[in-house]
Image (cartoon, rainbow, N blue to C red):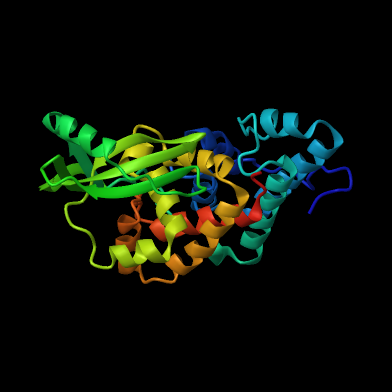
Length: 302
């Protein structure tokens, strides 16, 4: 595909790959999404993109690898986009492009246009905050080793409202009063409450079963991707923090439980994710989760 000196056989157009790298900094869901979305565009020549990428990597090996990634490829990150190694990440991009050259049908099925990743909402009533403070003072904090944890409590009185939304509009509907709250805990020397949000008024009937079966999924999906955890942050930024701050052992367990979660059918998958406390729910939820568990095993985050 390239000459021994690392230059492509012919001049190739770096876009859409380069535009995808520039767009990584604006990714709201995960850092693989802009790359896959760009490569799924109409008329992309995967062989050309692979030629261009290999010329960039060859140049990086001859010069300063990080500088070439940032200044020539346009990957505007101080640290690698995935994991701890620029070379490992660059090799994965090569593997992915090679896969597309060999089998173009492996293009990822992700939306080409922006959509809402959140379709459930919860708002606490200001008048309920005193009752919440009393409830939090009596909270029995569970033991554990994860950086974050997540609980759902019924405080016995209305605390706010929850509503539903849509992926392709800002319309909200089905507003319902709730007596339940989701609580995000963080362990850093001591365990403390870092966020509370209005939670669904009724549990999915298999919710308790799923939470008992997958305790790590509960602590991490709820602890990092619930309403109180994400707040005004992007899910991509929260996932990056989770991968950096949780222990390698805990992340490995997350991937094991995640494989079991992904064995569910689509309807049950959405129901289970909601029961586990996750409010990040794009239309391509299954693929978002698959990529999360994939990056745990593929890249080194410690």
